[in-house]
Image (cartoon, rainbow, N blue to C red; front, side):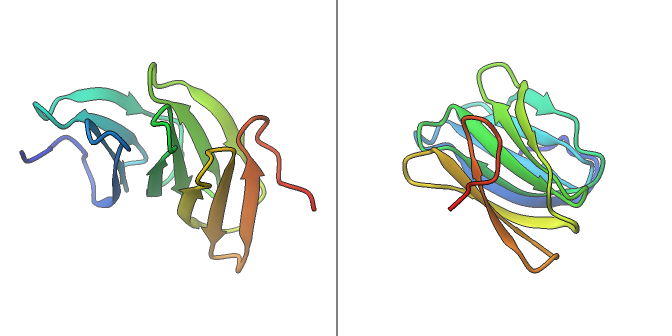
Length: 128
């Protein structure tokens, strides 16, 4: 399939753990969730105010994390496309997001020279 629909550059793609979906992040500020079998769009996730530079599925496939040039990380629910948490704290563009193997944390990397570890349950920065 060729999955078309974003209106600007696509910066990041990720398969869901079961391989049935693809998430894509774009300079158009959206995340799209695609069905692999037929190439249709399940959800267009809007809310970032600048480019989406990184996307990742949670290990159970129920969430997507997105990092953006608007300095934020968002956690989206795959089932209905709603935002669960908006994670703020980086002071420059977020270029990378990843879930922990158990899905309880997200790591984000930014141009502000930091990696932050966030708790998925409440959207707070993990304290040590």
